[in-house]
Amino acid sequence: MIEIKNLSKAFGEKVILNDISVDIKEGELFSVIGPSGMGKSTFIKCLVRLLRPESGSIIVDGQDIASTSNEFALARVRRSFGYLFQEGALFDSLTVLENVAFGLKYLTDIHKSEYPRIVKEKLALVGLKDVEHLKPSELSVGMKKRVSLARSIAPEPKYMLYDEPTTGLDPVTTGMVKELITDMREKLRITSVVVTHDLKLALEISSRVAMLLDGKFVEAAAPAEFRQSENKAVKEFMEISGLSRE
Ligand SMILES: Nc1ncnc2c1ncn2[C@@H]1O[C@H](COP(=O)(O)OP(=O)(O)OP(=O)(O)O)[C@@H](O)[C@H]1O
Ligand SMILES: [Mg+2]
Image 1 (cartoon, helix red, strand yellow):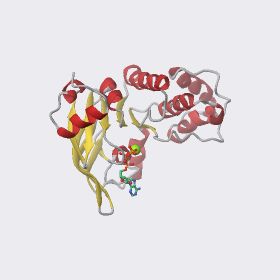
Image 2 (spheres, rainbow, N blue to C red):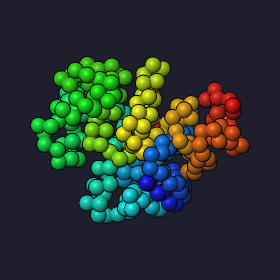
Image 3 (cartoon, rainbow, N blue to C red):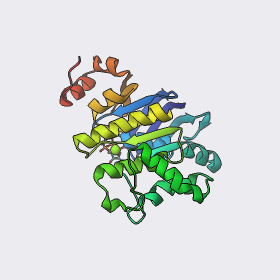
């Protein structure tokens, strides 16, 4: 479980996250939606301390990672997270096998003779086979997403963070990624946080959706309830996303 209490983050004078409190429970798929530049990536980066918040606490499995300077505790918590970066971030000079095995090398004690078997298994989970020897430049955009996802799940994280998982993808690939995220939650029971500006996606896959606006979550509710929100900003976001209240 991830317990976020009074989380605040600013860049200089600019307050991005302003006193946010929310609990993300085991098995949940919690989505954060909101316009570009609102701080969605900032939020997700705070969860693994890629960014250090000014104040508040983020308690992951009993360990507060917001302010700890205990590197061991931090490393242990980070190991329980998989992170699908907004930019994908595969290493161009490494093969698919080396990319997917990357986290195994740095985050686990698994012997490297096991890598090919594990990589094959994770690639199969994301619907790929016989691509181990290819380089990222030889893959389609959708395949790259799948490989990135295989890499994130290879060390068997307890939590997954997805930053804009479908941005820039065609509708077919978007559908595939949507299915993959749902699968990761259902098959592997991974507690997930998705940040996206795709409200339609969020409403389809999430157990709860929150809208980030001016540093706050203005609504954090189950999709059906979110759709009925009386909040002006939520209503507007629904409208510009082409969604009706029903
Ligand atoms: N390291 C940084 N230093 C200074 N400002 C930053 C830094 N990272 C982000 N910001 C600023 O914080 C704000 C929130 O950025 P963030 O990337 O979290 O937004 P976002 O909601 O993820 O946007 P997008 O939908 O475009 O990905 C932006 O105004 C951005 O310019
Ligand atoms: Mg972002």
